Length: 119
Image (cartoon, rainbow, N blue to C red; front, side):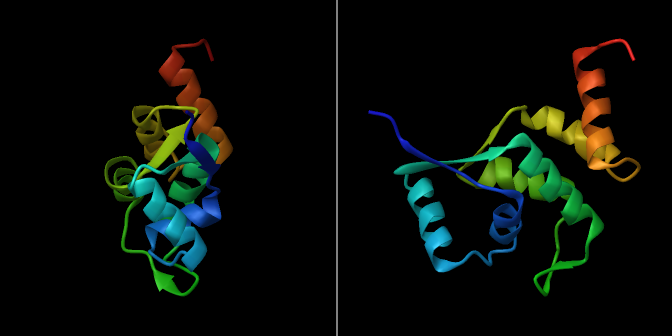
């Protein structure tokens, strides 16, 4: 029997990290924590979230008290959310570049470095 799965977007992921999810979404996270459903975050949604966390002081009027690395750790270590598309080690490489590059360029450079391709 396969587990019911949901995909989370960057906005919902911001709200999750700041603990301001609407009741229905929060109930879904609780079901995922209980192992009843799965929640998948596409790689790009995680990258967008980490970039926003690193570039803003607040979201929806709530102060951001996390660095991008701390946000990634919260997603990978403390949440039931599964990152799809790349591994967390690759995400850390993207996070290290986003202060100097756009999301797009950080992902391209990370792909290049991770896969050892020619530039």
